[in-house]
Length: 247
Ligand SMILES: NC(=O)c1ccc[n+]([C@@H]2O[C@H](COP(=O)([O-])OP(=O)(O)OC[C@H]3O[C@@H](n4cnc5c(N)ncnc54)[C@H](OP(=O)(O)O)[C@@H]3O)[C@@H](O)[C@H]2O)c1
Image (tube, rainbow, N blue to C red; front, side):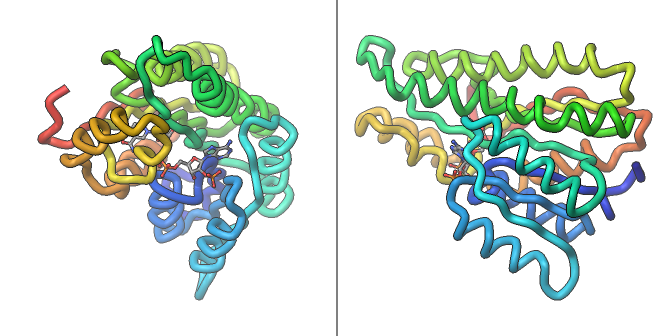
């Protein structure tokens, strides 16, 4: 695996909007071959077409990260098309926050399925290839909510704490295979994430918090920083916030 971004094969889940899309655009501009997964195929197909012209290479595959077979298919397609997988970015996620007493059990289940199981399935899909290659980089997306809990975001925060726990366990376990691991914890970044809130009053307070949100390219630059370090350097954890964010 080369040290720069150029030529790296990067698989991104949740690439149809927000952080995933911005990352695909930045890494592709830096010469990476990106493989895009999300449920909205029209969006990722358009993005792949954009990124594939005039140069560059991009693939798009409809992927629901709650289905292990679909995540495996995404990663296997990357390896089949480009011969390897250098970076797996487990980014897909949602944040339908609400106070626990409202018993929004469907929302809890969706967060657990996408934010935790989706990350696990991404790890499961990429790991066998990376072990064989004796190289690779797994990037998981946590959140400031993976460090701090606030009233109304207990389940989301729990899923993002879980992502940090999984990332740290993974970091130690994959040492023998020369695999790098990074967990990135963004603060408020301007994406479609607040639209996943289902409770109107909670949505209003989330939109207030997001008044200070910074552009999605901020996340993409953090990813580019981690990926572009020399292979001997493993950037394990990045936390960033808008300068104006106070929690
Ligand atoms: N924006 C922030 O302030 C912020 C802060 C901290 C952490 N994060 C984390 O960053 C990640 C990306 O979120 P975002 O801010 O970019 O929000 P976003 O614009 O809403 O993007 C979420 C992405 O996840 C995908 N997704 C949702 N459910 C999925 C499923 N079942 N299977 C496959 N893909 C699925 C969506 O694609 P489809 O709907 O097309 O499937 C979409 O591409 C999430 O993990 C989020 O928790 C965001």
